[in-house]
Length: 567
Figure 1 (cartoon, helix red, strand yellow):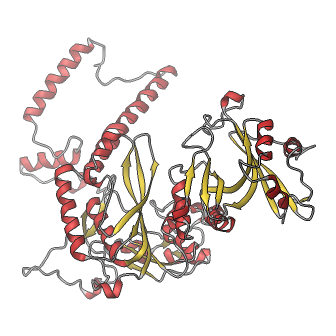
Figure 2 (cartoon, helix red, strand yellow; figure 1 turned 135 degrees about the vertical axis):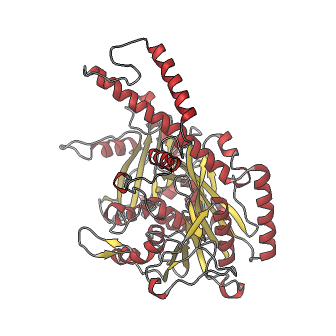
Figure 3 (cartoon, one colour; figure 1 turned 90 degrees about the vertical axis):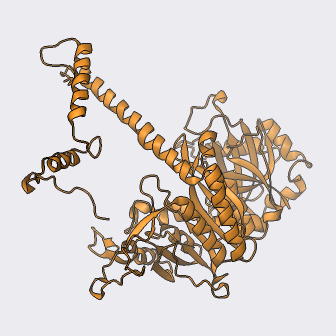
């Protein structure tokens, strides 16, 4: 057991340690993991120390990671070359010099790589390896390579890592410049190979894609969080075009997808390049992945799984999904059809069954989240995992609007990780990961859900946060941004010398204040005599209202064409 230096990617900062912890849990070393801050105590530093049991286990963990570059067995660190060499020679701080000799022996091959953060020291066309050679020369007093240098198929890989900040005269590169200047040297135990899958499943090259298809990188991270692996089934209740299922299948899991929109599951679309019909199945075949065991049109609220626990509990390895939040277009669940007099739902005629699209009604996110967690706890085996995204806010006052739903809970599930991805300075989404800890108990689950709904009524819930997001984003921030763009456009027009028409002024000039007063009076008089209209900008509705009041019908030739969409 020892401390390793983790060299993270500078991406999805809140996900990095959570993903590595999840992989340690997957390989049975989760309880032994401990974290230590690097020099400078900077939270967003790409370098952290982690305690792991062995080199072999550390290698397994990092090779599957998406957000980790490497795990390094540190031989020394320091502020400058002199301090670094003294640290390497010190037998008490890191790996003792006697233990280093086996990796520097004559019968070994090696490669040294400069891995810097915040800047890059490049070689020249005449001397491409100059920066590496110079650093090896500074290490020569304490690190003597007796083996042979080899660029490929080497025995040992060494990293010379250097961080810098703006105080050392380096130009800003878009990376944080508050990381203290520090030098590290050590042997690489394992490289993060998981990122090689990102270009393989590039969304820009995928034939069947939707507007809400999950980003490849995040999909792979979600698959790691739920321990997707061979020998188990992963279910996505909101599968859409199957992006998250593709990531789970990459790690060998069998996949099951359901979605309430039968059009996405059944019909797909025509590929414009090949003129072929493509769908979720073709995504899997294009990547050479095993096809899903099933793609079903199913409502999470009225699911098709048997309610007998002996038949269903434990058949899922993991549940993963990206539920509809309802900020722009809310989630949907089955309902809305007219019922017979006895309350039963009328049958769909046989001639319409093939193309029938079931009717739906709004599905509040709080209810959707409850159904998702309850079904996951019902179908997962003990130790199985659930991961899904939910809205979150950066501001504490905004976050408190979520009330009882600020931290989701279920009596059969334990929250093991939560990671925020901020999409703006104020709003974002949170990936929450749960692990099933006890067998499903229906009575306990129903009681907990009733108490949660009661707390929502008293303290608010996710619907309150979503309503705040709608008001601020769509009626506040976006309106202000639109006004800002219009003002900038007007200023550019004036700078070009073009005449800007002001509708507030009458032709021939006049006093602007008097014009505004006259306009206000005319508007008030018009509003008194005006027939009530449907909305402030509804011209068609106003026209219909006027014709209805007059008792005449609008001529078909004058009617506005329908520009909406039947749903």
